[in-house]
Length: 160
Image (cartoon, rainbow, N blue to C red; front, side, top):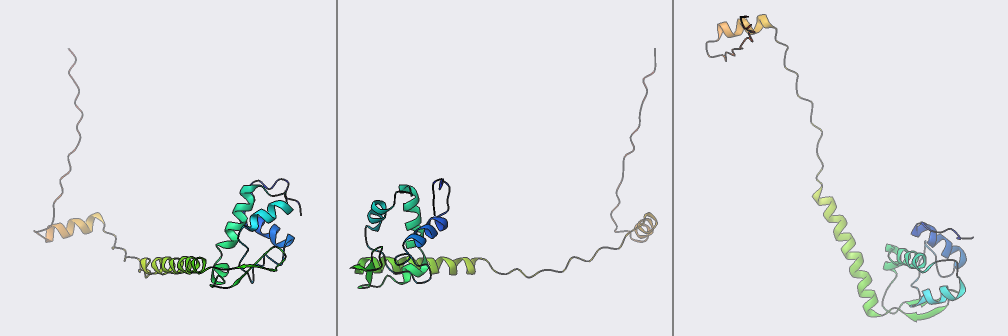
């Protein structure tokens, strides 16, 4: 799988490239905590990805909710071959849990801020009134509103 013109590739496409090349380390269905500094190992073994592309791919992978949920204190981290290479620290586990909690709070906030609006029935149309009907009602109703219109007159100047 060549990424020669990988400029503009999405993080998901870059991640698929990494999971095809190192399936033991990059598994989207059951992600495992990665070794700290794994980007150096990838850089040594693979020169096809630019630094920015590698950074975006690893960032997308490590910010997935499934990945963050697996970061428990003392869990084994893996290298590119899937072999243990360190453990998750208490600070890393706490950071992952805090990030997951803030995401859940944001989702709850969005749900509570957007109340459902019930569809309202369209307003009933007013009956059409004809000129005769209006004239009849205004004559019968002394409290009715009278609207006067002004006619426009054209004047000619006398010629001298």
